[in-house]
Length: 324
Image (tube, rainbow, N blue to C red; front, side, top):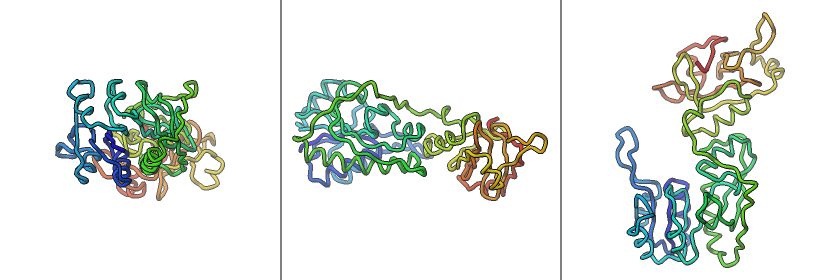
């Protein structure tokens, strides 16, 4: 097929490479304008632009697709289909109508669950055991179009947003190639709007750990916010990022493992945010229910390090409070 491809991050670049390798005619590649990045804040091309240039594919970086000029350029590409993956710009109806077979979206969830900007992170936060890829026929709504194909991907207990992203990117690349190869046989299935959930964009504020929450909820937050924006808390008024942590929900099991300190005065676990024990390789912190063992952390202005390395340079006494 003759394709216009629209995408920006590495998730989309994997699909572009797969489509090119499958022999499709990539007439035009749309991606976001170059953005400042890195310490020097130099203008940096997107992952999709880099992949396109490596294959000598034409790249187009409009600020908007709503202008007559942009729509004229897309019309000139004379595409059979537009494939969209995490592009970042709204496609107006005039653009959706341009390709002969419309626009297909590679969405990183099993729609209608997790429509929106952050489906990977929201699935981990919610404790979902699986997610996946939906190939969707795009309409003017937010991820509301008819579904053409689905591929399930399990969410492992060890998955971070980064590792799950990579698994979904690989699955999405395979799924879109298969969908185009079998396009004439695909049957559109309308989404059940009553089952829809919304994957809101992430913010740094929400990534701050609330120690009143259960430990398993906080452990999922650490995984979901890795690498961006990064789960964090305060220690002596300074931000501390948490990159790896393990939840202990059974206080009895914790005691048997000699991992929880109880007060000699009242024999109860510490208050939420209180350091229960500073061990050789982890800091065990009380939560609203259970305890969270911090295993990899990053002080402000420093590198990521193990809890052991952190404690070697800065002893943390039991009773110390996180979060303030």
